[in-house]
Image 1 (cartoon, one colour):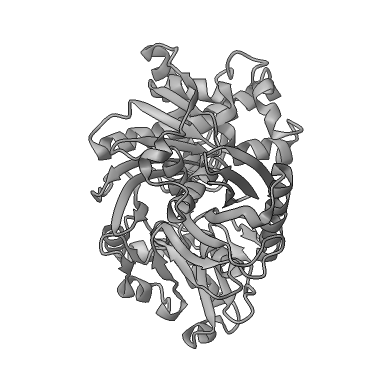
Image 2: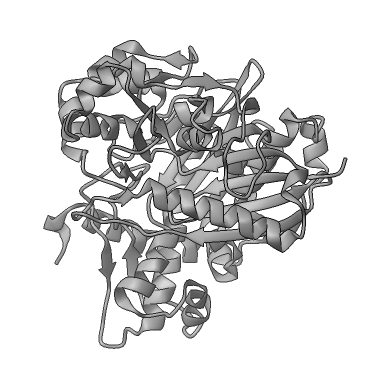
Length: 499
């Protein structure tokens, strides 16, 4: 089959467009960053028009690099930063406020209020989620309460709510369609993942009018067609959709129960396929919808570390220790170890398994001998340690060990980080040839809907491992590292522990 699939990966700091041939070959790729807005400490926002421009620019550049005609596009897949919350005018498509980003902590007190009222178990049982400002539900409630006239307009049906996927389909279709997919719906705090529908009781607790909500569809079907998109002809099927971490799980071909992957992006996200069984966590993880194909829903356990690549960006932009993010590995390799410096990258609180929005970043063990290289190495190790905590919790919930871990995302290219991760986990880590598996998963889902791929087996045939990392330390060395890490986490979670 001639032509190509277009994958739009709308991420936290930039938008990526990737073109995939019918044979699974990457033809072209482009990324455009967009500004981050921090109106107050702990608040993170995005301007939707800046995101839209970054998407259009990335699509144009990817097509130009590939040297193909836009008219040869067979279908579009979308993957997105998930819990980032958008409220927009149905007629104009304009946001009534900047999007509130998944990292934003402004609703921490509201989440505590709901917990104190005894609501968390109801939310956990129906949605698989915990009450945390990370998720979309309390963000939407905040917008309705703080944007002038928003609640009255929502009640009248004039406004629409969505995560970024929903808003992108709306814009790509010229405002004709308001849909989401099951994986993104499962991140809102008011979608019953067992029954597969919006939960009116949970929405009422958050005072969310049902008129705001999108139609929930599967992850691979034709939702709409392009209309009025710069650089693209009208009529291209928009045919695949999944949240970024679910798309990465799919792109990593984690189709069997027990398969697990970790994506190292702005944050780091560990997911394990649990099949059609909905496994609730007793260890601080989330239960989520991995994907829905046709009438079959596949579930996953998920652990989220809010800060991964963002810690490297902080070293670059906040401290000026490196000029570019790709310098982190060479800087860290200037020393053989951290000099017992430990960095807990709780720059936006701690996610799973702690769920502590009040934790703060901590660099512990500094001496006069500490250099920028020690801090660089401690930053990479801090990212890896967070995944160890997630793997421990996931193995306990799933009742099975993770014997191999597939990795992806930009930071997965960092050999030092991957080797240290393998050392601390004591498992083999497989890195695929294409670490852009988030975009790849969205392309696969769209390709299945438009007939480019005939099923999961045809996708498996295209998966290739570039390198495997094996553990190289003793258990005693591993235990020493982890003991220092856990002591530092305790200090980051309680100012009384910092001396």
